[in-house]
Image 1 (cartoon, rainbow, N blue to C red):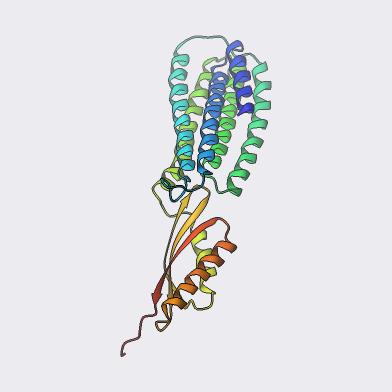
Image 2: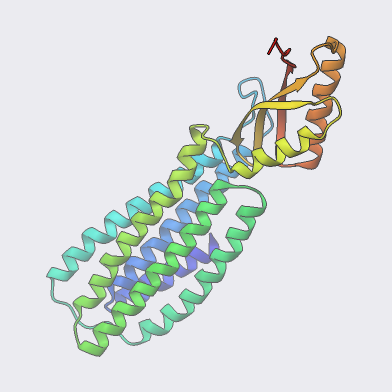
Length: 278
């Protein structure tokens, strides 16, 4: 958030004094990064709270809500930049200053590496919000690239409007990226099935546990940083209730120990179906 705030000040100041709306728009996008960073920070703080009476499944949904807020900031930035770009295209103004290209070169490199760094963190902790914020950094790098291209064309062709067209093109990319960031968060809030590799890992582990002779339904949902699974396990029909209960706990404990990202496994025991006459 601190890096984004400093970058926003630098880009907006340079854009204002250097007569580049594309650079100013890029600065506004960085400012929206600061606001989205605040949303992610508090979303993660809430998501890490333990379960309580009012939230028996924990507060994990705060995390994708934060990701949706990040996407909404992107939408607001895209709409604002596109509207102002159209206004600037219609209004005569001086050529951008050449030094704005130097600033954009440094910004591009910094935002690219920042995006990669945040993306690695988001992937390591299975955080939709942090991954969305990484995408926000990448979008900022893309808008900087558009600004660089627009200013270059404006200076080479003595065409000031090229800078504004670059900002308009960047707003379309920002809007598309907002869709990409919000979609997985909305799906998570709707309890859509997560990455199928999680289900295959759970099935693989459970199928090799003694007493398990088959697996039926396996429903999984993501809650914050963790996954919750409902697993139907088939056991021999002549097993006692006590034996079935023991197998269920064994499945739960082994799956959770081997897959730390799985917070809970609700195991339902199914008796083996008896074969009828052929």
